[in-house]
Image (tube, rainbow, N blue to C red; front, side):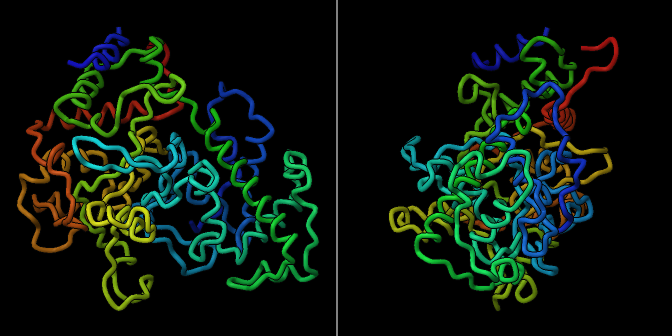
Length: 440
């Protein structure tokens, strides 16, 4: 048993607008936001920052669902969300924005292999190299993504933030950010998808700087204790103010041991001595099947190509970067290892969440069973949903067959009782834990 494990056990003696009530869905004990964090929060929940005035960041990253998609019907099917423009959808499941304190994308050498660490988005394309912060660079993407908030120009974001009535203004935090000479027709132009906005060189430079300031404010909010309160039962267990059940304790032991979950979802302390983040921010291909209910994979429709789409993840991004192109092939099919904090957070047991980059899995029990039996069960003869694959006692082939991780999963030899214990432990990672009367 590792020293980390001993210490942990010893402690135990995008189409529906963000709802206003989500804005205060936070731990009551979280410290007050700084002015910069408050500005970022206002931006995060502002539906005006979309071409239709109907979508905010929170539309796909809702606090009540662990800062990810909050539409159970969508999660139960495609897992991908409609943008501000009706009929336009993303092609990946929204990742959580909580506990996502990834470093700037970089490489490390481990056991003779070059691995990528950090960055944001499932494929790491928000590297953080320009702003020194992957979260800030990620925040800049959806505002002008045609299938998300779909504003035609970054200056439209700046214009709408500058004219907003936030508790903390952009101008107050970054003086001079809004001293831009706007075209007379800017508001009309910003309401048109794909429209061209003309600014003079000096005003364009001012707008670009202001856009970076907005992104940094959003990043500050996403790093705040309101978004990352570390208030789960597991955290109270670490501080000796709650006691894990026998099953939760077994799940933690299996998570760190025979289940090999902690190889990537690490139990080491986070930056500045904070509790574990349950991710090492690397990328992996665990052989997740294609989601047959995600129409992005089908030719035509949401996928304008004549051929079925394959999500090559990090590898597809690396092809676009000359300095990393030579490492693209060995990273095809790899996606960001997500945090497991709030992995089960939802308003009710009946509310469905989607998991993995393509939303294939709908249950934690199915994920754990896949990790345990992927290489034991026969390969399904057709593309099946998680439910149908479980019913037929097979697993579909991986979406990307190259680079599938064969070392830490697939044939773990766990019993049903042990699988259940891991799931029970994962449920102890949801923020907002309050013990029942008489319990810890």
